[in-house]
Image 1 (cartoon, rainbow, N blue to C red):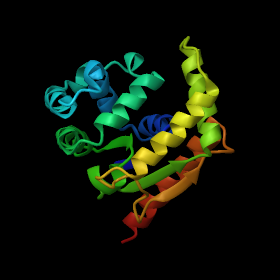
Image 2: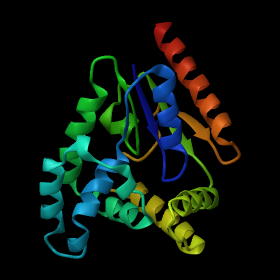
Image 3: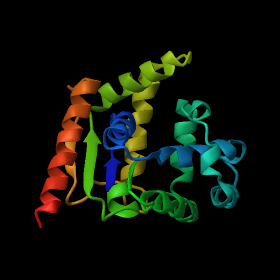
Length: 212
């Protein structure tokens, strides 16, 4: 069983995907960490003309088992990730890693921005998680503050909005709900309610598929 969970930054997709992995006893991959890892490795060259070449080398050699989320969750790394994600070569290199994870025996849960449209269009269940930008910015601010980081909330909201725009206009065009994805708005849901709603939607999707 493959479950695809897509959506913009801080929509709650990572929390939901982690919970789905536990509920269905499936391995989970936060695919955004792959791009964050590449972005962090090339941060010294982010304004250099050879950035794309450097990012491609890192993406091809990336050891997904060695990724440590604790070093990748800052707002700065999120910006770096969105900048390297526009490079076709980087996306292709990381596509292979994501596709391999999705197709492992027994299945998997993957969350990102183009899982249901590009990485695993044959997924058994597809969710697209959304939330109001101001709410997402507040969630991300609290998340970073819990890690001891100081956050400028106005700047955080501006970055959330700017990143949404970059993602929507990315040349690969994968950031959109798949035609058969279920839209889940978490703006007014707490964590438990969002997880409960997601599980219900996945159960319904599996039931629909098994009926054919």
